[in-house]
Length: 126
Image (cartoon, rainbow, N blue to C red):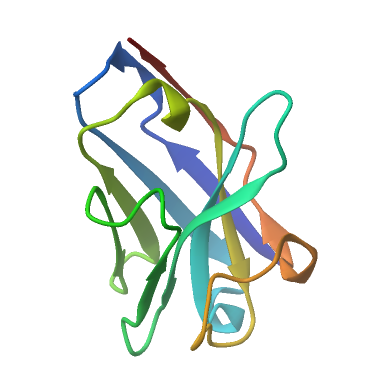
């Protein structure tokens, strides 16, 4: 079993920056790819970014490209999402996720996720 614990959410003004972190514990040897998903009321939970932990290969949703950076620290099994130039559309609950295979081609689909965190809220006011 993999446990994921997010931190770093908050409220801020548009144009600001925020860093989310997710610490993995438990069966971390089963983690090959980690990512972040966002869910906002009235919208589907969407993948924002993902990283294959051994190669560092990254994928981003179009809305995140150029503004968000995902990284992984293997020393403490922590994935970080640096978000810059935030806008109101970035608001939502952000969930950390992991899958036991490498995500070479794209962000994993929601139905492929095997471990989810509890989520951390990000609210951006314009």
